[in-house]
Image (cartoon, rainbow, N blue to C red):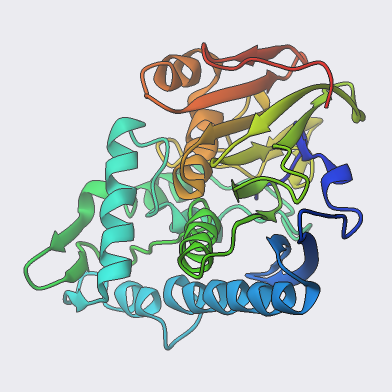
Length: 331
């Protein structure tokens, strides 16, 4: 699960429908993909703004239908259903998303892997777990995991999971993908500016109605209500992964809900990770991967990726940042 422990949107940008130079800022909060989406557009008037927001919501619903692993009519469900049996022909959009997911798995050494879904059957963070999974069960689940077991045929546009019991899930990338597609759609309709944000995964374009930059506040790790610095977000995206909201405890040990697909166990050592880059999809996936990789490997990876930055907090509440992050002290 993604949520905002480190980064929070500068709410003063959205509280009112301030108007300047003939533009207004219009905001709605909608329930989409099982989460709240805060959608803001800057447009000529409120009526047009609400129409634009509904267009964004419709696109997000379309993407949810495509990538859902529980909707029996979705292409993703069919891929999982036919694991170890036969390839499934899919749309160009889904094929490309899976191909990009495999590339992210490669650069993160498997810390991000959309085939990690079998672990969902072992680890429950809804209060229903009464004992930890056995090593044998975890080993059995890991045998069904591996991005290299996803066979893509570009010519036929098919996806095949090599082994029965394999499953793919877009939990760690799907929201970012949906946000990017919604932005792409609404920008094509010449909506001059806006923000799409859901649980810490967000994208921006243009500027506020006043012409000012969109800002993100960096919260004090000891008191998230206290913003100690600001980051301008210009034509870019961000995603945050953290461990405050969903976890389980056994024998006084805390297990977070972010799982390492390589070991089958929850990752630990980091409190939150916020990644900044051009695309929400990439930020979404990388925030999870860096949480799994840990501080040293995560920072090293980001510092090798052009146009991508990170701010992370470890379990000792120490803040680390990649080379390109520059904080501002005032909004």
